[in-house]
Length: 238
Ligand SMILES: NC(=O)c1ccc[n+]([C@@H]2O[C@H](COP(=O)([O-])OP(=O)(O)OC[C@H]3O[C@@H](n4cnc5c(N)ncnc54)[C@H](OP(=O)(O)O)[C@@H]3O)[C@@H](O)[C@H]2O)c1
Image 1 (cartoon, rainbow, N blue to C red):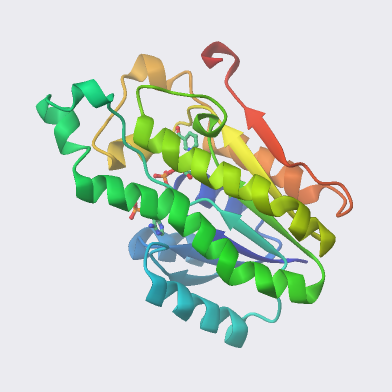
Image 2: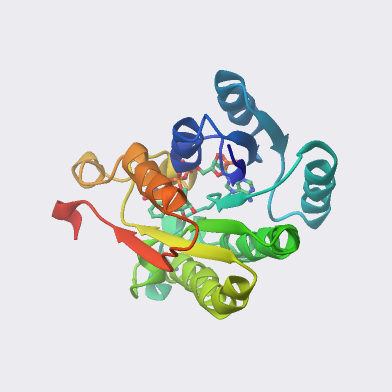
C-alpha cells in the first residue's frame, strides 16, 4: 500500500484516479468541498480542502500531511482549469468574459504555480524518504502549440518545462516524475469554464476512466522504470 495525495480529486480525472487507487492510502485534495467530501466518503479516504493557488492553504496541507499521514509516496497533481480564445478574439464579448485578467491569473496560478507549488512543498519529503513518485496530469496543450487557447497553452507548457528541468535532479534521489498528457476528456472541465463544447466534439473525448487507467499504468511501473511523459488521445481526435 502506498500513501498517495491527489489534487483535483473532487471531480473528473482526479476522482476517477482516486477510485482506481482506492486500495492505496489516499489523501484527496480539492477546493470544491462538497464534491471532495462526497468522493472521499464513497472511498473511505481522507480529504483536505485546499485551493492550490493559496500559499497559506498549501502550508496548512503540508502541516496536515506531516501530522496525520504516516508517509508520502506519490503525489498526483490533477487540479487544473481551462479557458480559450485567440488574442484577436478578445473584442468579442464571450471571449472577453472568459479571459478577464482575474481569470487568466487564476488559470496560471492553478495550472502552473499550483503544480510547481505542490512539487516544491512535497518533493522534499519524497527526497528525504529516498523514494517517491510525482505524476502531473498535464495536457496535449503542453506538447503542441494550440493557438485557440494561448493562455492554457502557456500554463501547461510552463509546468511541462518545469518537470523537464527537475527530473534528473529528482532521479538522483530516487524520485521519478511523469507528465501524463491527454487530449480532450469528457468531464465538466469546459462547463466549469463557461465554455460548454458541442456534443459532436465532446463525444470524441476520452473518458476520465481511460485517463485514470493511464495514470495507474504509470503508477504501477516498477520503481526503477520511469516514464518522463506519456500522451493519450481518442483516435478520432488525433
Ligand atoms: N478535460 C479535458 O479535456 C482535459 C484535457 C487535457 C488535460 N486536462 C487536464 O486534466 C486535469 C483534470 O481535468 P478534468 O477534466 O478532470 O477537470 P474537472 O472535471 O474540471 O476537475 C477538476 C477539479 O479540480 C478542481 N480545481 C480546479 N482548480 C483548483 C485549485 N486551484 N485548487 C484545488 N482544486 C482545484 C476543480 O474544482 P472547482 O470546481 O472548484 O474548479 C475540480 O474539482 C487538469 O489539469 C486539466 O488541465 C483536461
